[in-house]
Length: 255
Ligand code: HEC
Image (cartoon, rainbow, N blue to C red; front, top):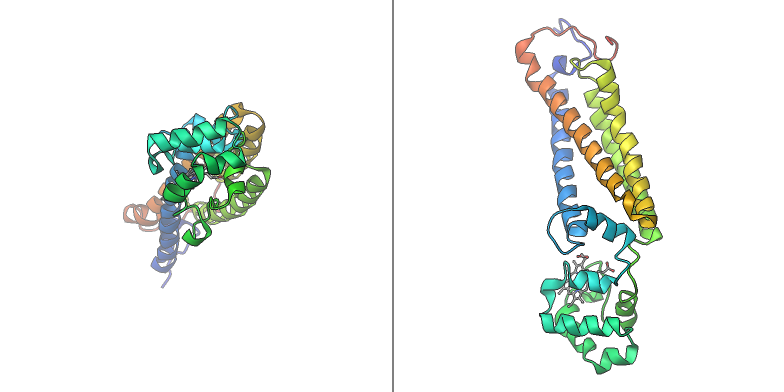
């Protein structure tokens, strides 16, 4: 018999706790995968491992002193070709990435030998196809960072997806009984506020590199509130019940 069933995490039955726990664990793993993916897409932008402010500037604002080819051949694509071949490509880029020179100076040959196993339609990878000269030439132009169309695409995916994740994490956390009201409200609202800061600063960084700091601040604040909600929810579901048998607090009303 349900002697006292109250609206707090501690008093829920095992089935609901199992559901919440399963969800929290999977989104935590998803979060970690997102961090790993950031390392791959942005972390290597400055050629060094690990995410830094330069990586963010290069990714969104671009490396205005050079082209994407420059940046990549000194970054994540450095290992794909020996120095000699990289130097040839970069010299060709600096001389204006002329189409005739592309074939005459052996750039076509280097691409065929070193790049197109990945950079072609056949590879199945969603990266530029370097079997076509135009696609190489495009990346030899000055790097102005992420395009507005890719920003728009990434922005809407992130806004919808992350808001959805924080809806459920926040809903579970709102049933925690041991957190003071002001702190609880702050932690629940924080990810939404900083999600907007984060995404707005992608666009602003494209215009002015100083905004890169807000990308870090936004992402960091989201991660902190996620970790806090996650830990408190797990604690109240699995540790608190051992301490207090009958938790009569109502997490949604006792404020
Ligand atoms: C083993 C597979 C592989 C090989 C070989 C390879 N690349 Fe890449 N390349 C990738 C992947 C994956 C990405 C996307 C991730 C990234 O940007 O680091 C990429 C991205 C790039 C980009 C950025 C494209 C863009 O517009 O975002 C450039 C430029 C590039 N590669 C140049 C080269 C060149 C030049 C070579 C040959 C010397 C080469 N790559 C060889 C896998 C490869």
